[in-house]
Length: 423
Ligand SMILES: Nc1ncnc2c1ncn2[C@@H]1O[C@H](COP(=O)(O)OP(=O)(O)O)[C@@H](O)[C@H]1O
Ligand SMILES: [Mg+2]
Image (cartoon, rainbow, N blue to C red):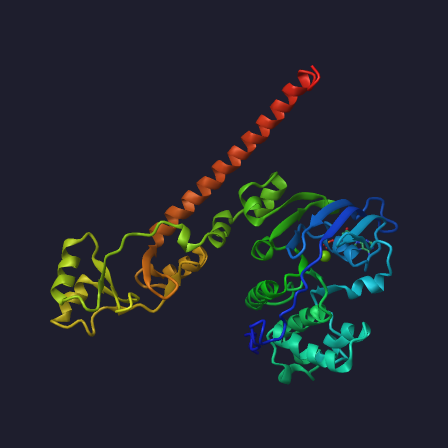
């Protein structure tokens, strides 16, 4: 079964152009003691989440991620502490009412097996008293939004869907009543890696349109980096080891626990955070289809390269030409060289560029601008150089950061020794 999005991705045509954006969430000393357990599962977590941001809770299994998340919609009652949503203290309001304002999606999709897809999605809108026709429209709209054809999926039962499709319906249901807040607990944990990748992309696209406040739990740091505006790395009892942007956590992990999580593969992760436009591209000789054969020949012979790139009339990469190709061309280039079949854009990640370079028989990839025009070439050497440089820069930034911290501390100590401002 295909996981490809079939629905419209255009906010206007899907009728989802709405102003609702997320709400702020504040957790204040939130604590959970499970009965019979001497130490708390979650110990005094405080955290400010901004309206419209995606915050990821990441941490080892059992550290209290799910417990913390479920306290936000009071599926689990906190033992102490407060929860504020848009500055309203919701710690003591009716949890059922609260949950209608908060979408919730979980790993196994949580769909009711005896209800059709449409009935599952309609659940909360019906409960909050929407009219029949409004609910009906909303179901269609939601299916469309998560990339499922309403006509095809409307009347199906969950068991007749693939894992990925069930997750999509789960997300559609969570969003159906247009809640400002969406809580997601390892929602893509049970699907295969390729489907997971698709679903992650879809979530990014959705969030681009909807600007909900999303709190997303995962134990997968790569998923956290991909999806998070900010990541809270949690250690045991949900103690926050670090709460910052993906870049800051990658480049300045606060301690060994966090670096352990960032861990091996830092170079590979860096590839996902850097765009082709940020690297220095190799110089590469070009000619155009209108250049006379002789001048092309001269260029190849005189330069240090044994290859050049032929551009079409609109400056787009067209063919790779090697010396040997010209020798065999005998007066016409019509059949000479190798057509460029894969290019990367300036906005592609280095990861994408590496992929293109690795699968290209010549070990290089042409980089193009917005209208497909040629900008430069990346090859293994340029990629390696830039990754080395980036990692070195990260390392220096980390040292500098450490240095700043030490300086601050020593200044503080000095001030204390001098007896403060009154002395
Ligand atoms: N209903 C429960 N009753 C008792 N202990 C629980 C319950 N749910 C979770 N725990 C315990 O609380 C801790 C945190 O669990 P959880 O929040 O599920 O962690 P995570 O989602 O990070 O894996 C674990 O030690 C777990 O065994
Ligand atoms: Mg969990």
